[in-house]
Image 1: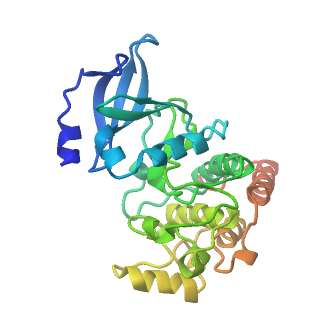
Image 2 (image 1 turned 30 degrees about the horizontal axis):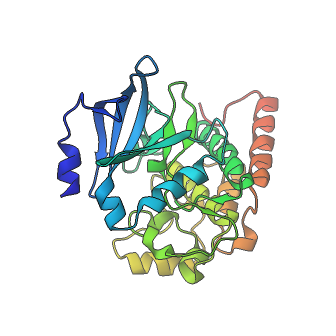
Length: 292
């Protein structure tokens, strides 16, 4: 019912006496995401995540919206989407966020699409920098996936959506709530025992890289239980099994990021960035690209 209501708010409507609705980007039964023009900032484009206020209070969800804002505002980095503030009245509650007109990384990932090695290194480097800033702020993102990686007008990749992020050290609750739609990015330790660390976010980043290079995940199928069991019990297949032209240096980086045992994985983004930096230096010294 809320989805139908949010989908049918007339474009041009001004919320909170300030934001004119330009385009509906997404709607579900919880929220609507709108591209808006800020009439108090010369119609600068921004994004509002709009909730129905009575529903938030009825289901005790208002604190969750505040939680997302509070966590996101701890991070200040060009590779992380900027959150501004919450607006609220009797009808609507909204999170005011930076607009990224380049869309989501998922828009580029059609089935079986395989990225070039240079493109992969560029993407992985940007996201590792953003994730490093997230972790330095004491945050575990917990839901890294292509839909949550946006592109600015200058082509800069930005990590978004801190809806289920937590502060490191907080009790990890409701871990299975993030399984639907994100099963491929969940680390084995999260699936098995609900443990989540910075290395778990790095696993998701590595799984993203694996998919970008191979056009598929290491474990695939339609049975969610079997997929989850496979990542707990089996090591991911070597990347070159699905991408035979992959340079050994690239494979080593990606396979370390998706190691089944967390102690064999990168523990901090700085370690991943170090290896990516070495790869870039070697490439420049050879005066060649990874692919033509």
